[in-house]
Length: 243
Length: 180
Image 1 (spheres, chains in turn yellow, red):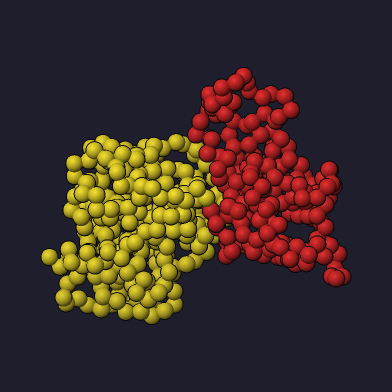
Image 2 (tube, chains in turn orange, brown):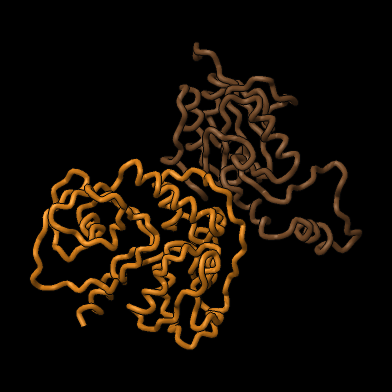
């Protein structure tokens, strides 16, 4: 979905979220309305300022009259919607999703540079993941330390593609992309070359800052030292979309 | 002095660094309060050599990495009413499980042959055989309470024990997390 272009004259719709009557512009998505109204919805791939990807499924909500669940990030509000954001069923699904992310690759929080500053770790605690009920895959993934400033650890990657989108949409370099399917799926730089050899990377570090986990980090950081700063994103995104 | 009967607690460490037990001791003066409410009947912290037949709360630190660890986990499950996984190694494998990416024989060679210059040899006597795959405790036996953290803070352990003493099953999510 392309970045939502805000039109000057849009209708206002009324809807009900978790029993609260709210009004919103009809070009807004459910997650945007929830965030504006301090209704917490977990998400990993969604990030304000980037296009919508809809991959992590953590922001799934229940819509009255709909049998299937909807991703709040990729669903626009409509008149009269009745939405539940935190039912027992959703809590169960979210917990399972986070557990599967932990089981898929290797998130060893205690020795991770992002320990204490990681969105996946934070969500695990929020969703009540005190252990992972499925067996760990125990697959080994490579680390790319070829870039002089940054490091990529596929073990910690959850394939949210924030790096891909920020590089393409905000920096305009499109160094990052996605390759392979299933468990082989991974983010790549240029044509799957080592990051340090990339011709297109401007070393701006935006990918590092938007990465929710310890997959993209600064070189030279030790356990818990990788603190990310995403303040630049909404500002740059607004200026880009205003062009 | 509390008049209610004391609950019995047993603890042991499997493949861990003993840091969770250190964190346990880090409860400081609260330990005095604790011993008025619990009897520690078996633990590396006390002198008893055998696990009693019936224990109210069993606390395991560390992951299941060897035959000895497996034996201990099974024994604790058999004799403890409530089994607690204490710390990230027990809860998710943590650092000990990082060897799972390699073949066990390669790991053993790395430790005892490749990096040794004088008389490289693999110990076989007096040490338990390592398992091919390191697992969290709940990978081999049922676990009732999970306390993540590396290590869980003394406050988190205090909360968990206080709840168990009060006869409730604690939810440690509010006080600790993976890697805490």
